[in-house]
Length: 239
Image (tube, rainbow, N blue to C red):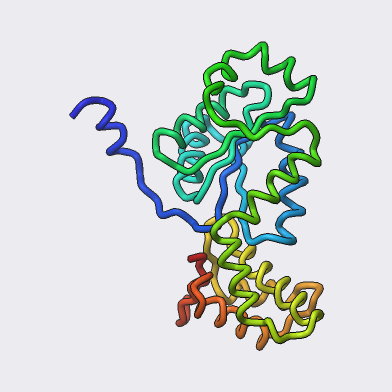
C-alpha cells in the first residue's frame, strides 16, 4: 500500500450531521463578521454553523484533528479565502480531497483585494467558483440564501407547513421558535440528552411547558427531523 492510500485508510470516518455546516474563515480579521451573522441566522434557520478555533493550550496536531472531524461530520463547508489565509487553503484542500460539498467565499472590498494580491494562496484557488461580497450586508445575504436552499431547512419548513398550517399566526411563531431551539440545543455533536434539552427549554424566557416540549420533540421525531430515543439514557439526535 502506498503512502497516500495508507494515509487515507488511517483517517477516521465520521457520520455527517445533516444540518451542520463548517465555516473555514481567517481567524483574526474575518471570523468576527461571520460570528455576528451566524448568531442572527440561528433565530431563523435550523442550520448549525461550526467554526473551529485554536485554544491557547491546544497543540497544532490536536487542532488539525478537530478540524478534520468537524469537516467530515458536516453536510457542507464554506471557506472564506479573503486575504489568502494558509489555514483556510489547507482546510479547503482536505474538503476537496474528501469530496465534502463546499463553497468558496471572497471579499472584493478594496482593502481585502490588496491583501489578496500579496498572497499566492488566492492564485491556488483562482480556478474555483467564488461567491463574492463587498460589505457585511452582502455576506449576510449570501449566507441567508445558503440557509434557505439547504436541504435540512427545506425539510424543516415542510414540517412546519404541514404540521401547523391551521394554527393561528401567534401559535405558528411560538411553535417555530420552539422547534428551532430544540434543534440548536443539539449544536456541536448533533445530539444531546433529552432530559437536558427539556430542562434548558423549560428555563427559556418563553416559558415553554413540559407537555409542549415533549409534543414538539415527538412530532419532529415522527417526521424524521430528529430521532428521540426513549429510556433512562434517552437522547435526541439530528437526522
